[in-house]
Length: 358
Image (cartoon, rainbow, N blue to C red):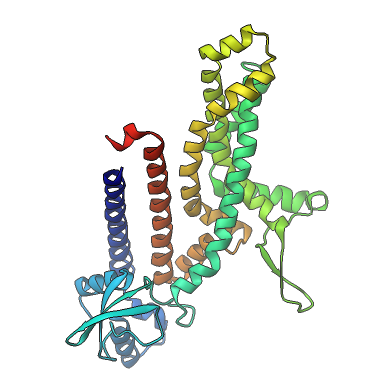
């Protein structure tokens, strides 16, 4: 089991290294001169030189790449020279000095995602820390909706197998998996937030926190969570519904179910006490994968509904070419995706020793 865990962790580190490499070269080579992006259209040659020196843009791409890895690494090397890009200012980062070699300090620190181009030098980690919790709340809410409604629809489909209700649910599930999230978001915002606003009292746009009109600070507006959570949960809901139906039908054909029927147990009791629990395994497997992908899939949903999460921040950063925010957000999402999948793999290996021996 230990070897299995180490193998999975090794694959995770290689995958993350590949993601970081692709992200760096994609957003360093293609967009153009990052110094000009930071200064705008009225820069001078002196200003460009200062910015390039400060952020290391005056170095070859290979040197910039090594420095970027150094910034992200937990174990990193930093110059003692204040004029060097790798100089570690005291108190600026959460770092612990291990030892020094000549003019270089070797430290353990938190990953440094650099500073935003457009937010007056605000650290990317601070931007992500402010927005990621909102995205997490949205993703969890969407998963809960998908699980509850999807399982119920799957059970109803089995109860009315091959009937009108069953076919209608399958049709809706197919549509749910086919329609893009951004299109569903526009439709839901227009219908429930505009046309039916007087009945639903839901807003077309709005985030988790709203500012009080009388200057009493912020307050939580839970109703703004309903529409984006429903829209984000449509696709996993459709998948859960289909998986639940197929899994439940398969379980109902098992011998112990036939025995229960022969004993005269009511059909709903058979489903409730015997078939339902054993039918949830593929559903749980699917949900574990969907939750990680939702963090990335929330981008357009958040932007359309004005939900102040990481997805909306990524779109805003793309519009303003705020490359450090884009790169940092993608790396954080990729890391969460990898961590969740590795955790699920380890749980599977623990539950089924055959997997860990493969």
